[in-house]
Length: 129
Image (cartoon, rainbow, N blue to C red; front, side):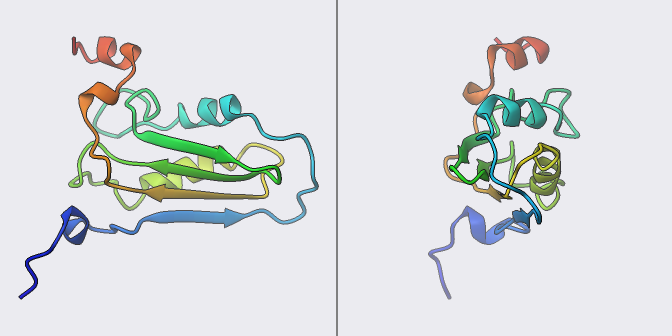
């Protein structure tokens, strides 16, 4: 019996990754991180009335010179019912930006999300001080 299990061993869809490449994209101006953030702010956790960016669920956004975008994100809980779909929702929201060559959204569990990761606006909206 293997007693070396981690949280990821018990989470459904623990390797949840959304990837998409876009055909016919010509090199253009580098996509700005703020444009990506604005699209991410349109995505909400279905149980919390705050967008996932202000909840602190987005750990990293990387855009290379060819406009390949990689987003690392988490969820508030491994038991979240949207663990298998929220990365796709983020990918589709960001994928609407013109000029993207590819996008990858990866769901990770380390570091573990805490309420301290929320923006001040999110804390105010949820009455968490």
